[in-house]
Length: 129
View 1: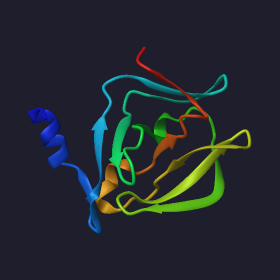
View 2: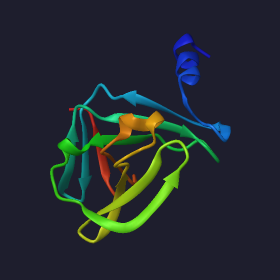
View 3: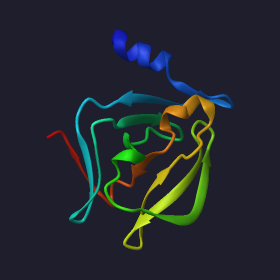
């Protein structure tokens, strides 16, 4: 393991009840755009990437600040709880649930406040210019 990878692992946010459940939040140094069909949902140069290990190693997820949304998202009557992030609320566009947001994450995940993440199978992600 490289020194950088080891440092990221040591700095990981860990579930107090299960130290094998952890995540790393990283700044993304490139522009990220999210599309649903032809509709631009978000365009950001301030995205975060979350790498999480829980029951398995989850696919990395981009989280984009609310200020970078380019279209209105409709709240969905659904929520879930993550022990290392907090309570997620879900959102839809054109009647399709496409993502989630942590409005008030637990303190150790406060960098995710009001950042939106999207289901990879329901959106198209463009990374870079």
